[in-house]
View 1: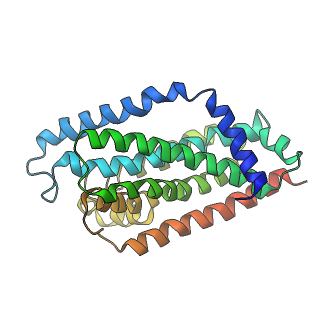
View 2: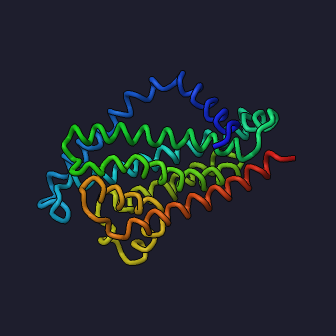
View 3: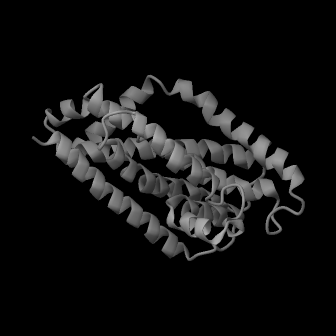
Length: 253
């Protein structure tokens, strides 16, 4: 990352330094309630677990990946649109002057920082529940960064292409919610009908879930690890290209 991009990251970190206390409680309370509700509550009705694995231990890696997804998604929607339409932060940065690539890279780096930090908090709660079965569970942190980039970059491009947050509500409803529900987080993708199963495989979250599940349980993923990583990297690269094009169109006169 270039020095100007690091300056953009620092700008976002300085702002976060003033607000981080508001997220500490939810960072630990949310995973705690989620694991109690789904892992313990729902898990009590899942006899024999899933694939011979207790439901709590099976669902935790899906929740880890889903946490990274939701944080990256959330930080790539209204904050990005705001920097274009309301607060005009990007235009001020472009006048500094900073290159479009520096503005984009610095903000994306902050989003990945938030995604990894939230995943780390979830990982600590999962460890307290005894739901981690392998030291490979630590791999979920870089996986959270890769999954976060695979999601954040294309959402950055989308947020840079709209002028009203009504379109963000549509994105949340028709992209985030279905992807969170049908990507193997709460039940095996194999139980879905063929068309929905193929759609789940095409979306990035399932690949993050499968890799995270393999890491926390200490088993091999359903698909090849290299294939998963390459597919997520493809989403990230394509999203970065689109985001740079959309940012450049709006910021370069």
